[in-house]
Image (cartoon, rainbow, N blue to C red; front, top):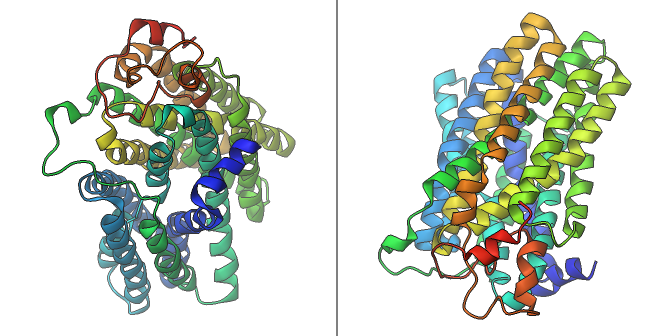
Length: 440
């Protein structure tokens, strides 16, 4: 637990609180849009289309925000994105209440998704910069574990807030609250002193090109778990409807979130000898096992609850491992672009998983929807098995002297789940001695 205390000592307690509340609007947005549009139009088809526009905007806008943050700094881009997002969320409410055409509402929703300030990916970039020194890299896995838990808690708390606020007031109130949170939390987050300095003057050097193969693999890996989340949400909803428990869908899905948040915190204590690629590969195996358990056990309420708990426990290590690899590949000055690209894979996967599972649920019931995560994670397992050839060369090497026997930096890679001095500015291929020692 001393490592978790180190996070507070490094940033101050208000940073963790601000960063958590700053990511709530992203979790509140999709359900807030569905709640408002469905209540206003009486059509879930229209509500789903507007929510899809919101998700598409987020998937496209994430990498754009990340690339701009790399070039101009997190502070100006973060403030601009938060303000635009707040205005766009308010505009959705005004458009719906004024009777605007659905296509207009969808365009405004796409803008709101596009302007998401990407707090989750960018805060990971900050941890990377704060713990760049070889003597401090051992704290990095704790930071990523915390972020995994914080993400899960935010995506439980966000929809819950939407439900509570919508019951207590007008259907547009959740989006207004989300807009206020952007101004009072996301803006201070962007301006916080932890924002890393811009380390590029006018243009990126040729050495700052992204390792396209490795980044694409990690985006695909995140899309896999996105499909799992989207299809599972749809499957649980269909299960609750078919079994006469329509109000229980949120509570059933919350089991996954609780398990994932707990496992995210515990991931910091995984054995230090497990390297980053090994963690990714083994968590992919566990994720596939959890998805298959859902397909097999999802015939009774007890079976669904057990499978959801298993999925929660195994999904957190997978997310943390992929995020750790994303932070460790390619040039440090493109870190924001990489992290937001990888995060966009989840968004796209959720949309695809929900769409495919919805069609199968209509045709075959909830069992058809529960089959989608199993097939997706089996594909993800094959992807992980072929990952070493692309990922190992992309891991950034240690700076000179950092791998001396007995030094703190020598043991940092395994404990942090990243390559030696993964946030150094040096580039190139890892030395064979450093990559071969990882089990993965």
